[in-house]
Length: 276
Image (cartoon, rainbow, N blue to C red; front, side, top):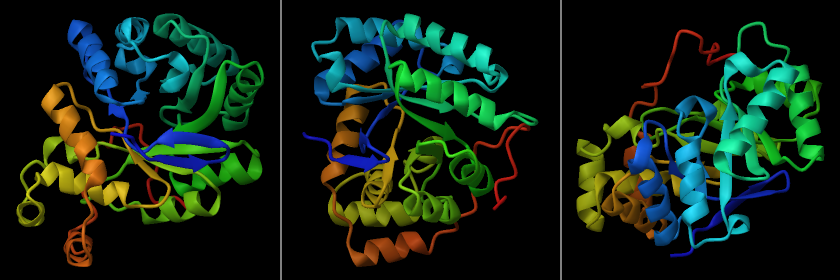
């Protein structure tokens, strides 16, 4: 199945990606290789995940050419100083066995960080061809505004927790107004949406799964991509099939009525989420 793309700031990203957080070892390599064989063309990782080397092995073994794969990695918050960021990027490229990343993100904002200096290092790496596009992750609107309007960085993506139980209205509105893709991590609320009474009712009507309903809701949105983790072939195929699901107005109304305040990723170093 051909995966539709979402574009922003000169970037073209497949709407469905393979999330790899908590995948490790040979099972990680197998999952990435299997996903590419099935038709995935968007792989998401991070230095903090500890699996870039395994993903690099999968990429080296894949029958898909590197230039057909959209590859994202992220720099950890302890490495945001320019020299540390540059070293972290080079280490990620070595582990991934690649000359460049399609997208490089600041994984989390760090308290007291010099955002201008970090983004400056990323822009220099972009100019050198090490990164095609730069972005951020877990940035509320206040930090997005600083990056885009104060610093003038060409932010192409903000990766955030986003699913039917957590609204991201302010982030989405800002992103759409400034040509930024919102990439949804934990789009299935860390497995909590596999069984959900409202989603189950919608799923029964369409003869699909509740998880596919949750993904289809995201895929229907402008400027939104999703990166569910999926190790098994059955899950990967189901996620691909969700691209073809079309929810109706009644379905969207039922999902809109769900509470949108359930955040499941909220570490102690997280930024103030409502900062505008």
